[in-house]
Image (cartoon, rainbow, N blue to C red; front, side, top):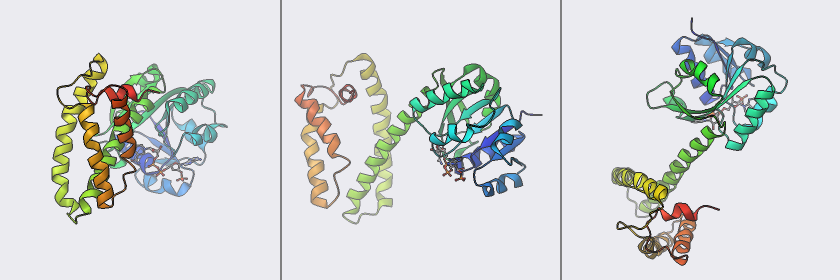
Length: 285
Ligand code: NDP
């Protein structure tokens, strides 16, 4: 038989995780603060735990997926974690992951932090993967079980590393979402259907991303920011047209004014001939 797993926290994500373990054939014990959410999983074959203590006692591998990390140590404070491996898939900061790791080790548990690169509907599909960091030996032991959820990607023994990767990937995503929201807001001022604009926007972003990401990465690592593609000077000169157009068309410039300020600073500090990769250095505090 496959190893048992306990899943604590049955929100949208925790429920998807528990369902994936069940589907893969693992015995699954579930616990949720509001007990009603265990219903659908029990119907799929999970065992409901009456208390957190029972849930943790049921399996050597314990998955936690709460709203925020503030809840995790509080909820588990009175629970015996001796000999357990805690895999915390709650979204949080690297600092939180490090302090939870120290806390869990004091409680006699091995700690692994994870960052889920998927929405619940993608769990147990090939598109999903989860970043892991922390106790490597525990990770190697439980990796075959964790693989039921999504692809497994180990990023290091510093427990904060998965959160750092996760937040950096999501940072890229939120930057893209800001751009997409602004582009649709702008196009909609002329009553152009967003659905008509979606295809050219998607194609443009895809083409830009496949050039920009590797190109910037190389420049950042080598420190060679001089460009024959597009200089900070020319971007800074053109950027006033964007802010003016947002104003003219009645679209808030609030997301893009900070970017204009950064471009202005790059030129003021003498980097007009460099490419956009120079911005990475300028963002260091
Ligand atoms: P939900 O709001 O659906 O679920 C939150 C869960 O946390 C519920 O089970 C809730 O219990 C529990 N919870 C909150 N506070 C406490 C507490 N003090 N003690 C015990 N349990 C508590 O959120 P999601 O499932 O969507 O997200 C869970 C985590 O997964 C978050 O950190 C999120 O960032 C991360 N994540 C989510 C993704 C998504 O697409 N949904 C993608 C990647 C990561 P109760 O039901 O009793 O309120």
